[in-house]
Length: 251
Figure (cartoon, helix red, strand yellow):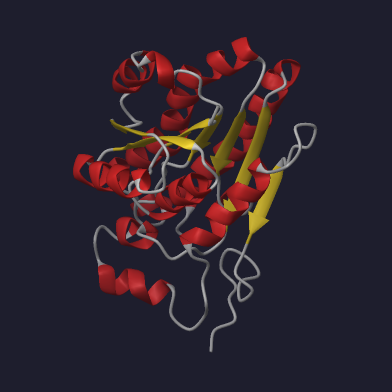
């Protein structure tokens, strides 16, 4: 019987790449996101790889919507073996004293509360079966703080702490918990951060070779391929040209 993976934020970037990577491994997929048209396109493409796909359109910030979507799964989809908490974003790059509270709430509600809502809905099933693997997509921003990163860094530090807390709470139940923390990955991340300013977003990745979403998807595949007695607790993945959150070697 194929394993079932739930991926949040699956309509682009790391989430989408992870869906394709796991489909190659024969994993059935619940792909979740806010953009229904993209979800349906993704479903059609993934099904070409001979896996089952269930698209779920909801916003992780909506606790009621998360609960309704995940508590009303068809019976054949309730046995979720893998949860990839990928949905997340940065909004703005202002100093704290000049920050926009709408940006703050968007980041906190998505990166922290959204992760909690989805995990709360999925983890009890894993506990009951005494098996499962939760992968939280963190960030180098969860390891250090950089100028303008204040609230985003705080949310990713929270993901780091929550991952450790999950591992402690789920330890007696045989559930693996992993955090993967990328450095610079060229996805829609900077476009979202800069509120759709594509020119400004493009400049973030100029002069060096950044990671791409497929690099992190391959890390996810590796983590999931370890024997049951092996858990990768924490993985930090950077481009060769990046040493810290802000220090790059650019040509």
